[in-house]
Length: 611
Image (cartoon, rainbow, N blue to C red; front, side, top):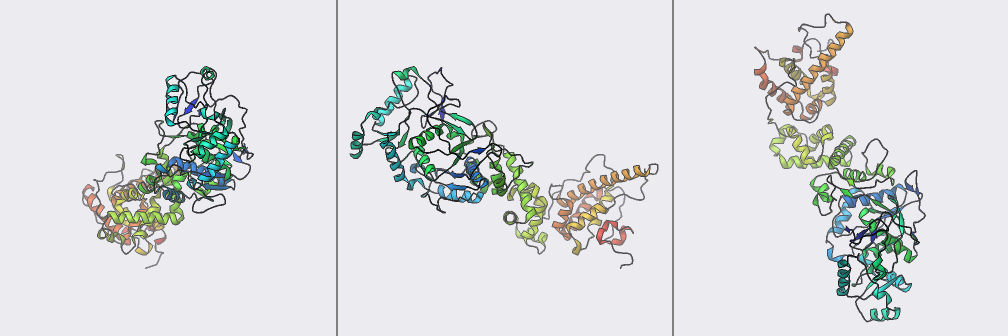
């Protein structure tokens, strides 16, 4: 959390103050004579990538579950490592034992694996720089804090909580920024060692005179500074952040820096909320005489009103996307990748393998608005990809829809439609045909409900337009004719060919084309055929699916099967019989009644002389 200091300044822009670490941040700061210490793994300006393999890490705390923002952080670190041929590490920062959630660590592992972000080193898989859980590294942090004490870059502070609270209130009432007066910095090394040896409560503070600038991979040269204040000449204060708490455990800042150095991390990609702490971390690296990794801070995620997406909101928890909304792992990874990263490809649709080949550090500055409409666009796009490959993802889609259908509809209702087919065999072509509309199993089942019941609720039939001139009898004839295909040839390809080939014009109708040129006549014929096909499709969708959106007509006929298609077409004819003027002649159920021209049958048309 950030707040502005109340004391006015005249020498520089008013800095931000982190209320957790008391570090002051300003996007514009005067130069510092402290070493910023960026490593030599430089970024190529053309490719926006390091010149050598990047070693990155994701270091979550098990005080909560993986959410959209933390997934993006993990993803960017993973992609940078994979893109450069480096390594991606997982480290569990569990020093805050009081807030640790018992199942959060295991959930974290499960969620990362679900997303496909497999770590090269870390818990479970091991590695040469373990342990990878901070609660198992306490002795390492204490020894490094002791090293800083011995070289004069840190000191023990024995001030009581009461004294520190009183000093903070005094500063606040005087309108001054918070800080520490370094009272214990005057304690001699011998006295400090003796008091600590006797068990006197204390913390360890870093001794800093100022924070250095650093070069951010996203924001460029930036840093922190403490603005001059005349009252400091009377009552000087220092930032001197705590490294070891009174219980002997490290603060996040010390553990983070020590671990990143010992684990040889070269690049740290994290959210801008950590930007105010980075100069403090660089100061710690300088105190240890270590070279810092390169830092890149990715933009804050906000909703459309500009409010930060809080990790406490259940609707951005990974389990909400995965379990409640049925979002694919590929979809969520694709969505997260686009939150602040820009690319030059024509399409935004990427799977993880494609992202590994494309990712770079071309990351936008400023807040990133999360538009969940994009998530569902990507979900439908990935559903189409899965449906076209018949891979394990498509098999899982079929399984989930089958389970949803079995949960929604009784077997006695489904059996007449399946006609000895298994439910999964029935659903697979339905998914292929309507994958472009797939969001999740429940919504897909509801959208395509007419495929799971024989009882259709049709509204009264109305033509597709008020200017329609296609006789209903022509639609009856065409729809019945299209069902005369024998069972052995009842396929999607046959239905497509037959609908395309069917000529809906009536030879006995007066032709308006007698006075037209051949070219005009052909054009008029095509227009008439187009108008007929449009009305035929409209009628058949009403007949077969009660007008509900879904797969195309050829696909619907193939999925329903011949028997159910014929039943629905006949039912539709009876429901519209009263709309036909005058007595109607029943269409005979046979090929011969349809005239000599059998071109509508496509490949099924019998050759001359055949019986």
